Length: 502
Ligand SMILES: [Zn+2]
Image (cartoon, rainbow, N blue to C red; front, top):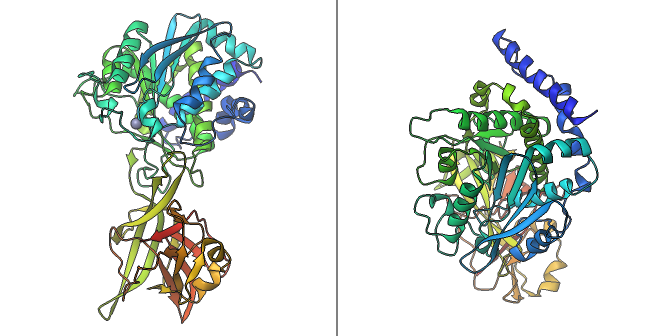
């Protein structure tokens, strides 16, 4: 089936959806009809996925060769349009001959790389020999302009801000950052019709009052405090409704809508004000997708589909009112939620829920990380959700013991049966010969360097690292090690690392 026909099918199904809503029926469109538009793009994705980009911590020197590849390709222009504070070039890749200008920029926050990867996937798609009809529509009606990794200095050290220490997304008026000035200059020179402002958000966002992560969140930013809707903003809303329908096929319920309070200093809000339909896309979390490669694919499929619908102008049929039906973003997720655990304090037993989040610390090269977890909330957490939820009813949180035998080297440590030790109640092991450069324990046992003393009683509190055992009727069935749930009977649990304690 040709993409064009599929698109018409989608529009028809959207219209049907609005009508069925009026009749009081479910707003959900026929899922079979909905999947059509994206199926081909989704199914053939691997052929276009840029293979040199595989994880979140990507650097400018990894994308520069991918940009340079397009310098000699017919139909493409690559221009250096600016320089970051530390001197890294900012490049604009343009393709197409249409009158409608579509401008896409990514990673103005250095630690938000998902869409940068998707941009190179989209460029690979445009450079291929497949989907000729659709590409003809795109490239004859539109001129596409990509500015990947607007904040390469931040990306180098995987941090949000630029080297000046400011948030580029609050610099649209002051324009003190060369990166922000470049963004404004390009927007103005193109007077782009559409602008895709591509970010990542915290994985702890969820679609309001559901346990679904906000895998993708959208915003058609307001251009004034009154949050008025003119054609410019209205068109952004229509494109968002279109993309939301696509994401629903692959991540049902996992889309959120950002609060649209006007922020006078932000680029999205100003770009909308300056006359470019601004579409903010935030890549959030997806279960078991730490490196966000599934979310990257969803970016690819939905943004490419949006570009196509802009080229055919078929988005104009979409009802703006559907924008407000997308659930609002909330922030009620934990990596691990433990419910109803018994906690003994000063001779009495209390029952609590625990909310645990896992925080990443970069290794010195900023190419990899280790995890240190914290209890971030405790008490009645019935209005919160977990990527993983464990009902600990009947279990008592129990202090882990220090293994009595000192271990000489890391090699010796790795020979221990961690699950067996945990079952015996041991959670901490003294290892003498650990090189300083080793930052984490690769097994579900916390390592101490010898000076560490385990506490006399277990303390559960906000800010505390969650490492303890779960006891029921005298036996230890589960352990929580650095915020990871370990099943001691099945000897398994999603696990990255335990801690090395000073
Ligand atoms: Zn951002």
